[in-house]
Length: 126
Ligand SMILES: O=C(CO)COP(=O)(O)O
Image 1 (cartoon, helix red, strand yellow):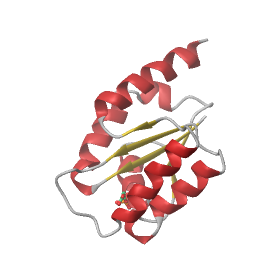
Image 2 (cartoon, protein in one colour):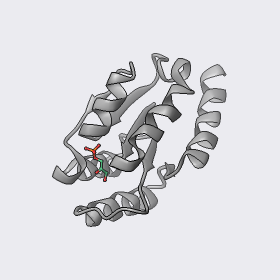
Image 3 (tube, helix red, strand yellow):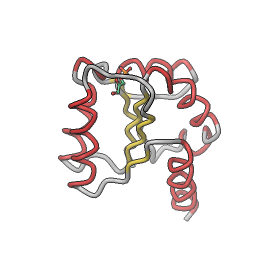
C-alpha cells in the first residue's frame, strides 16, 4: 500500500504529530510512504522511511497527481493550510481533482486522515 503525504508549511508540524501516532502501523513492511520534498524531510527527521519527490511549488504536487492518475497510490493525505496563499495553487487543485477523478481516498485534515488510518490499521491486522 502506497500513501502520499503532503503538508503546507503551516501544517508540517501537524503532519509529523499525526504520523507519530501511527508509527507502528506505518513501519509495517506493506506500507510505502512518498512525500513532497520539504514535507518528506520533516517526516524523515521524525524517523520514517519515505520517498521524497520535488518540493510542492517546484512540481511535487504534480508528481503526486501523476502517480495518482497512474493508480500507483492507495491514499493521499494532504494537510492544506487554508489560511495561507500558495503560488502553486493550480497544482494543489489539480492534485485534488485527479484524486476525485480516480476515486483515490484523499484526507485534507487530521480528523479525516485519522478515520482513514483506522481503516488501514484494521486492514493490516487482517
Ligand atoms: O507545497 C506543498 C503542497 O502544495 C508541499 O510541498 P513541500 O512538502 O515541498 O513543502
